[in-house]
Every structure is written in structure tokens, then in C-alpha cells.
Image 1 (cartoon, one colour):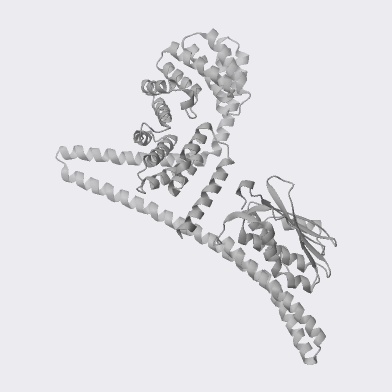
Image 2: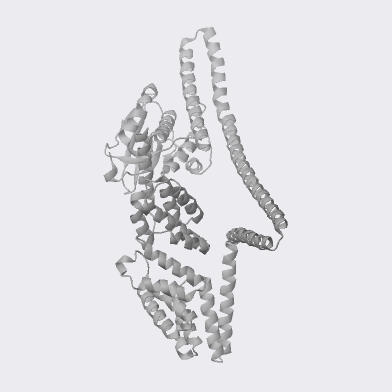
Length: 580
């Protein structure tokens, strides 16, 4: 069992690494991935790192704490966990907790320079400018190859802002101009608009209008190339002030109107995030309540020292009971909501399954009932030739009904998320041979010629059982809708570097263009019944579409009435170095 679990963990880590490699990360995030790769065998740490890279701060906090609680005393893992937590608290604007986490990290941690940078950012947010300068000065002296993603331009810009707030204008000018040169080299328009505006405001504070105005104009011209509404609004508003000071009131009014337009656009954009902002405000209120409780406790202590000991105890008990019942109410509401969502989902799944069962089984059972009635009549007359024909028809109906029930079972497992699913590297040829072997008698019964010309070198990434289910459905359809003495071919095409196209071709009755379009629609259960001898509702194909999607593949259908059908299943290729 231990070996099995190790294989599962390896597969999970491999595919998570493959997923990560397809995303675009900053230099800092790439360094995090590289430096922490050796610890991803720890499940909680790997999840914390994954959520950190996805910028899901609450989940990062949960799993980093779980990792710290496992008892693993590896100092480097602990440093990473405290680093993830400190950064997450900083992004959530909970600065006190962020600083606590950063202080728990060893000075020998590879990203310790980032900690200084983050502490400088926090000090700047809290208007502790001199403290922020001390942190940024330390980063300024670090060599570029040790920065691991820290931009020197950002360090110099932050220093310039700190000195501007301290009214040390010469130093502020020096650092802001330095940052502008670096931003210009990086061609970062967004940061340049900000920096130009800050330099212009610096000169305005010193009444150096002749130096400020060119930077206001640069900021305004560059703002035309960015999509940040707030920066566009500020640039236009600054130009309005400039033109007003020049007594050019017509232009000033024009810029003012433009500023108001960007303000309206910004307001519209902000409405989109209104729900998220309400959630943030709720979290802040929760923190404020905790602060209020702490303040109440301090007041109780003062009251105790003044002789109101018993009154303070009563107040404390009342507060405790209120908080307890409040928390219990929240907990109960969450449980009820979760149970309601689960029940709604189960009811929807139940209704869907009942609908499928009642719709799909009726036709096959009715066909069997009718056929058996005919069989009884022919047995009475001892018409052996007709009895043989009816028995063959019953066999076909039984096979179709069995396949329908098998599809229903897999559909139910898929909808209730009980199906086991594991994507691995598979050799297509042998999977097809295994499935085709079971269909040889059915093909022989209709004298159908079968050809499997798949190359033994074709490997795909798929779940083995779901791939077999796809092939069974496609074989079943191909046999069902093929004529006597027809053929079924299965082969592959490799026109793409990413996908391998598996093609199941027959020369049966085919389909119209409208039928193909309807079959390819999502959530469509459509009867493909073309004559009275063929039973089918499209459930198998709907299940196939779901399985192909779950395997990260694609489906296409090419067909003409009377000329046969091609089902084209595109599956991800296995990279050459991973083929068995």
C-alpha cells in the first residue's frame, strides 16, 4: 500500500508541476517554485505553495498552518510557511500579523531580502517613513543576482516617495528620477505614469512649475496607452490644474471634463467588485469586533483596580456568552447552508437520473415486450426460421439495453462524483485491441470487416477505464448503424504537436448536418434512431462527451447520409520523455 500511495503522490506532483509550467509567472514567483520544489512531497506544503502562486490568501494561510502543525521541524520548510503567511497577511492588509510572521523567519532564509522589502512596504503604508527608508536602504545595497525578483526600480521609487513625505526634496528628486530611468528601460507604462505624476507633484510642492509641467504632460500623454482608469483620471485632472494656472480656462475645462469621464468609468468598474468589497468590509468589521473585545477587556481590568471587581466579572461573563452564542449562530448557519447546497445538488442529480431512466429504458423494454409476443406466436406455429430471426433481434435489443444500463451506471457515478479517475500515459494500440476483441462476434454476425491500423508508437494522456468506455460506445454505435458486409476502421492522425486524433470510421447509414450539430451541443440527449431496428437516445454519446472533456480532449464528427461516419477524438499526447 505504501508503494501505491507513493505512486499516487508522485503522479499528483508531476501533473501539478506540468500545470504550473503552463502558466506565466513573475521572476519572484519562478524563484519560489524553484527554491521550494524539493519540499513538494509534503502534501500540506505543496497545497500552501499552490494557493500562494494562485494568490488565494485564505487557503494559503490554512494549509501553511496545517504544515506547521505536522511536527516536521525542517527549518527551511518552516521559513517558507511563515513567509507564505506573512505575505498573505500583508496582501489582506493585516499588517500586525504579517510582521509577526516575518519576525519568525531565519536571517539565512533565501528570500530574507524580500522580507525587508515587504516590511518597508508595510512601514510606508503605515506612514512610518524613516523606518521604511531603513529597510529600503538595506535592499539598495544588495547585488542584483541576490535579489531573486526584487526590482531595483521599485526600491528607488519607494525611497523617493518616503523622502518626499519627509520633505527632503533633493533626495526625493534623486531617487524618483533614478526610478524613472529604470522604468523607461523596462518600458513599464503603468509605473511610468505614476512616477511622472509623483515627480511633477514633487516640483509643484517646491513651486518649480516650469519643471513640473513637462512631467505632467508626459504622464498625460502616456496615460492614453494604459487601461487604468484611476491613473487616466489623475493625469487629466493634473493637466486641468496646469492649464488653469496658465489662465487657459477652455483647456482646463476640457481636461476637467475628461477627468470626470474617467471618474465615471472608474465608478462603473468599481461596481463590478462591489460584492468583493462588501466581503472585505465584513472581514474588517470582524477584526474591529475583536479589537473592541480586547478594549473591553482592558476596561474591565481598569474597573477591577478601581474596586468594581464583581461588576467587571458580570460584564465579562455577559460578553463571553454573547460572543459564544454569536459564534454558535454563525457556525449553525454555515452548517445549514452547506447541507442545503448538498441536498439541492443531490436532488438535481436524482431528477436528472430519473428522467434519463424513464426516457431511455421505455423504448428498449417495449421493443423486447413486442418481440417476445411475436416469439410466442411463432413458437406456437413452430416457424423455426422466424424464431431464429426474432431471437437475433432480441439479442441485439438485450445488448443495447445492457450498454444503456452500463452507460447509466457510469453517468450516475460521474454526476455524483464517485467515479475513480486517474490520467496516465497509455499506448493506444493495445487498449483498442482489448476492447475490439469483445466485439468480434457482433461484427462477425453482420459480416463487418474490422481494421486497427493504430501505430504502436502512439501514446496519449488519459484515464484507462474512461477511454475503454469511450471505445465501447463508439464500437457499439459503429456496429449498430453499419450495413451488412460493411467495414469499421480505427486509426490515428498526428497533425498536431499537442493532440493525437483517434478516428473511428464506418460506412454505415451516416447522419445529416443538423443531427451532427445537435449531437455536439452540450447537455443534449438526442435520439439517433434512423429506423425501427435501431434503438438509441444519444446518452452514450453525451457520456462520451463528458468523459472526453474530463480527459482534456476534444470531439468532432464528420458524416454524410448513406456514406458513413467518422468520430474523431483528440487526446493529449504523452511527451516523448514520459512514454513507457
